[in-house]
Image (cartoon, rainbow, N blue to C red; front, side):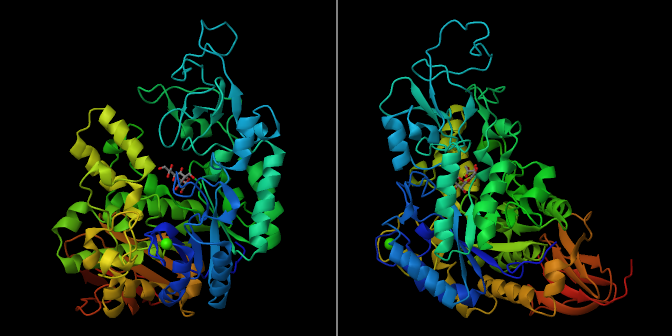
Length: 592
Ligand code: TEU
Ligand code: CA
């Protein structure tokens, strides 16, 4: 694998709307991010991904862009953006924006022109179809397929795919009776027709415009969806609504690489841009093409842990992930990626519940005392941080922010959660059970305001926050943790410092990955090895004290999540109390 400038970096995701509000309107903004750049520098991160701040009606919180060349006034101005790029550069920070090009907003001028003239040039920018009302299927018309579904007013839809946000992916074109358009996400997010070279040219021009402004690169949104299996066809329904998941169609889609390779060659490569793909449903054999040396992207996220246990039947059927399941996902990805490229590792993002509320068994979180709860949060941090690849920290993860304790569905903003609620209630799931399922899986968990302090609205705003603050902000906030040497924030700073320590970075960046004690339940442990150095990450990822064999003599303890406590260790074994986790350099010789 070719070595890249960003391999020794640590990355951070900002969800601008909830990061820091500089003008008291309750919405996080770009000037607020600028005010916090020194904080991010002090934490030790380098690459900063901003979730979208382009002009948008915010139907999907900015992932519905109505002008790719404008900043939405709620987040600031283009001057603010230029200032952010300058201020970041002064601090050797790299700004990466969100590239959302599977779809745009229905308020984008392209879509307005398509509505005005569906058969004109801009009609080709989208997937529009003029449809017929249902009648007795004419043999050979293709309408007679057993899975066809109709619009509420009887038009036969081209396919029975279900939007990621629920309901059919076909919506009536505003102002028309028999024209429909495709949206695999929200109806206010019409899919762009990537088969149209004009669309691709528009997108490449926009990407280069932003890269010429000094962006370090992009996180690339939902990009696997740009290649549909055409012509449209229906697949066996997976629910009583007669629809099937987009994933079912994606299994049949092929050729996305032509678009991704063209985009890379026309934009990212000429700018040596850093790119990280949000790729679900990729085919295993595609990995080298995606993140190999000349891959479509620099990196892509490992979502194996986030999708584990999810059920197409509804969120109430999603299985909770155990420490052993988590380990299996983490280790399987390490094995799959090996030296193909650099995978991007997360425990949460703006679409996921908080990592500490998901990957530490909830029953443990509830039954442990404060001290062991903190120890467990540090254990999770160390375990994901030192596997091979690029570690990402999502805003608030570094202080251990937790899921939001939902009292009512009225508190929920997330359109995915609101759809999940409908799906569950339609299946007779009780309000309480449906609420608990949203509390466990909903995207708002990661979108509550960053908890800066115990002051009003957790110090996020002087006004009324756009989304409620987690009531635990008086206990979990940055101001308190900066002062506390044993805090999670300080531990994250130590993790980053260790990864960057020249004595160990060669091993932590490029060393091999070797599972250790992988058959021991609730032991999350692995070896990182480079020529002449072996580092062991060893976590007793459970509440009970465990005595474990060492693979070789401990040479030096590099990190310990219970530093003040006695550590019983001999040449050949070590005793770890609940969730205690150590990172140690081993001496040369191996016992086995
Ligand atoms: O998400 C793409 C996506 O498919 C998954 O995150 C998931 O299916 C979705 O969040 C519904 O639960 C990206 C963005 O990360 C997400 O915030 C946007 O809503 C989506 O694309 C549309 O742009
Ligand atoms: Ca604001």
